[in-house]
Structures are given as structure tokens and as C-alpha cells.
Length: 237
Length: 115
Image (cartoon, rainbow over all chains, first blue to last red; front, side, top):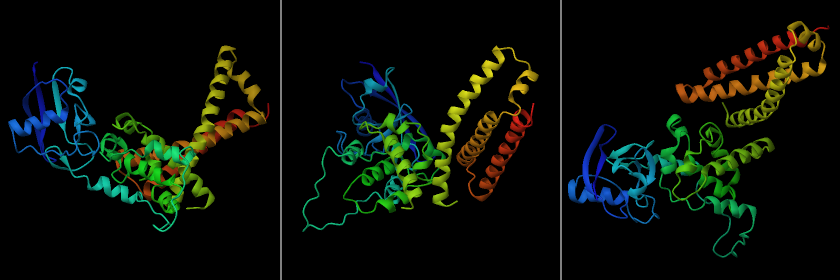
């Protein structure tokens, strides 16, 4: 097999691409390539990963111009001509090389009221939620988010409007709006309304196209838009 | 602008988009019919002037444009020029009023008065 020609971003906000040659292997993932470079070529290369099996959501990067999770992206899928360009995620400050500062991404989950607020205690009975209910099905459609930041990186509205909460935070809010046990619906709808919230989404569908878990934040955001308008007209918020 | 106003603007733009979708189709079909039938400008004006139904239809069309376009422009300018706030609200308000004024001027010219 031919060697891969790999260009990797080095530096922080200012920096440039450095080229490496990496042996091509069968079933090789992009994360394997980055790991090879760090272990065999340049131990100062900074990148982030943990589980390597698509659960933790920490290894997302920009691969040949598109945001992807690297641990489950096979080289054969993205490097037809044996060339890879690997950069940090877009729309987030770069700490070093391939590592981004995820604080604003997760701070926006908090701003979108992404925390469950219940009314029961451990002494109460379990709430019974039918898996067939409309609300539970909506929750199921969005609940598998692993917080990788791929959707946030792929979203042009985040690029244009730095205050925009982004697809992941709004998807989280939508799952909680549909959680029948949650008691902070009105506050959450108010938190995600307006120019920096769900109404800023242009339905480009980049987030839905790129989500490695196959979720559709766009659908959740559309649901939030309707729910917020209804709550505004009814005086709930 | 308050959160409530932002949400209501979004709602107004969606509803005006629905109205526009219908109006544009009716308008295009009418234009194609008029052109293909070889009607002269005088013949078209003869049919349109004094028509209450067409006056009402195009007044609705102009209202939908005057609502829809400025809200969209406000968003585009905000994102592309990073300019938000009261100044932008005033500018887009003026654009909306101008569209309404020019549109209604045309509506009165074509449908107002009697034959």
C-alpha cells in the first residue's frame, strides 16, 4: 500500500499545516493516523481522544474540510487519493494543534437550560412514560447526542452569529421540552427564543448532514421554533 | 429588540411567506395569460381598473412583501455585516414602509379608479 500524505494543522489560531508521511493500513481510521504521527513522527502534536469507539465524542476534527468524528471515520472513506488534511474543529478557539477549547460549546448548553429540572424526590414513585407517547418518541430521536461538537463546527449560523446557541444545545433543549417530567419548560423556551436561539437557524441542515450519530438537530430546532411561537402567543413566556 | 418581538417577527415572516407562495403563483399565471393572449396595455388596464377583487388581491400581495422582505433583510444584514440593534431596526422599518408605499402606488395605478 502507498503511504498517506497527511497535512496536519500546527499552532493555535495562527499556525500552518505540516506534512507527514504515514503508512497506509487496512481498516485504518483517521484517529489511527493522528496517533501514528504523534507516536512515530512528532510527540509534540496535541490532539484529544478517549474511547476510540464512538462513545465519548472527544476526537472530532476537520478532515479534508468536513467536520467528522475521527475514531470511526475510515481513511478509505475520506482519502480516495491517499491525501488527508486534518485541522481542528471550526467555530471554536484553538488551544494547540488539533485541540479546541470546548468551553463556549458547553456553556451554551447551560444557557439553553440543558439541565433536567424535576419535581420528585427519591422517595416518590417512578414516573411512567409510555415509549409509544408522542413526547417520548421526540426525545428518543434526539437523545443519543454525544456532545462531539461536529454539528457546531459544521454550522454556518454559528460562524455568522457568535451568540447563536448552536445545534447541539438546541437539540438538548428540545429533548427536555418533550420530557414530561421536566418542570422548567417555560424558562427553557424563553432561553432558546430569539436572534441567538432557535429562530436564528436557517435550516441549512449542515448539522443533520454531519451528525455522526445520525440525529437531526434541524428537526428539533424546527420543533422549538413552533413551540416558542405558540408559548409566546399564549402568554406562557 | 425584546425576545417576544423577535419571536413575533419570525412568526410574521413565516405567515407572510405562506401568503407570498400563493400570491406569486396567482400573479405568474395571470401574467402568462395576459401575455399569451396578446392583450395590449390599454386592454389590460380596461379589465383591471375598478376591479375590487384584484385590488384586494394585490393589496394583500404588497402587504406580504412589505412584511416579509424587511424581516429577512434584517437577518441577512445582521449576519453578514455584524450590525444589530436599533439602527438596523429603524432601517429595515423604513425599507418595509417604502415597499408598502411603492407597492400600493402601483396597485392604485393599475386597479384604482373606474374604467
